[in-house]
Image 1 (spheres, rainbow, N blue to C red):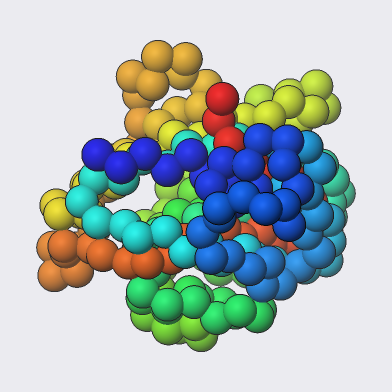
Image 2: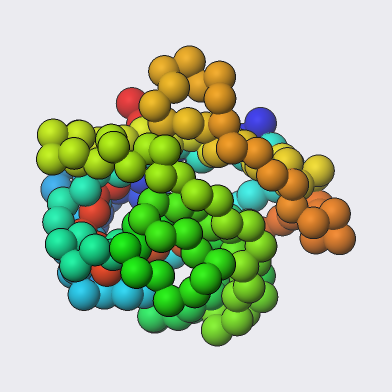
Length: 216
């Protein structure tokens, strides 16, 4: 199984983005990004399609680990972030999709425009076909966790662990409130789309300022 400690590959621990270290090909494609210490910050709360593209070959079993911290921007009642996985190509500018890939998305929206998106806290899985075409595959209500969105909790980084078997399509998104990673949200990618292979990951935000770092 290949372990992908997300931003460790991109920025290094305490190392400038432009330092002389070996990094995978990457680009802050849209939004306002900066790096401080071991954290990468997306600083534009108005950016709806902010993203960074990272070239990482993916096949077989993949483990994605990183942490996310809220900085600001959800005062308007909306914000989200997600991870495109197994992308075959990416666009280095604002885009809705990310080539041929799957987007795992965590969303907060007090007034969603689509009836398919639960009001409040929710999670979605999108199938991306091109940089401009995606469709919703799964949507789940996560408002059982909304009480955790307190001022104190939002000041802390939240760890995310995602395991994907690209050969079978099984995806496990582990509950970040479970210290033993015993509980997780599970779904299967359509069998017609497996095995999954791709050379890119794209991390994106929507209408919110967040920071990201490798999981220690």
